[in-house]
Image 1 (tube, helix red, strand yellow):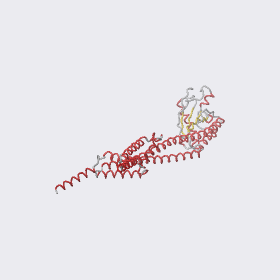
Image 2: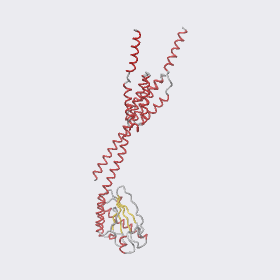
Image 3: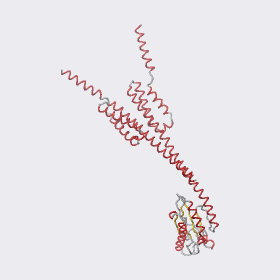
Image 4: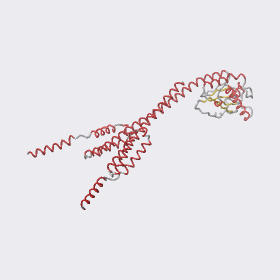
Length: 119
Length: 270
């Protein structure tokens, strides 16, 4: 009786410590959060919604994994979130540059038309 | 005998198993993409950081694969794919930025072309106007954008316009009406007879007379300003009658849309 209890608790301890692999990925999660805010500042909600959503999902999964003490899993999700956020930023910057270029070209065409009319 | 044959079979299976195990498709693909992009000049120049990150992930993915760690391999492949995506966008951005610089030049070129054609056209008309004014008795100087209205417009020591001056001033009014973007600064000058203060006042009054006629002809008042320079900046010697006659004059400086008025430098003919 006594020994079974002891054995049971031993199994439990092993199970918990077994799951708690590696260290808590504090830096990776912090990095992911920073890159997600950067992506948001780069207007990725408007221009790169898909990648931003994926980044946030991966960050959420990383936090869930942390709660379960699955640190290696958490680290991978956090790293994925960072990569997604960087991609969202780059796409958003690219799209907004494209838009500005389009507007600039429209202005130039207008300017040229005005000049052609004048002369 | 039989046993060793089986062992050989197993060994062969193991060896050939290793040899024929090809790199997983996603890893092979991402490596190919990475290799292709790392040979691209633009990528190397504008996307150094994501390219390097992708390369690191590809290496780590290969190590993980060789170690049989599928989870890490897939993870690194994912990261490499995203970083190559970032690199592509960085190159796109750099290309577009080059177009921005190009657009700036195009714009500058268009503005210059506009200014040139406007100036060229105006200068032609101004030349003709100056010729006509010269015929009407007002000697012109070399500056294209300065019209000189001679002293024939005013009686001696008077700032009221003579009746005969009307056609001359009308030429000016017509020109200003035809060129809405042009502004005029009317400068009055006298000869050196009389006191300086008196001449300053007289020159200003004469310039104002012209201004009034122009405004009455329908030219907006904010397009015409008035300066009195008295006996300064003579165009001829004040020692002779003919010289003094040249010095008694009104000069009209015509300014384009974006041109600023510069006061005449005091000539050293005094």
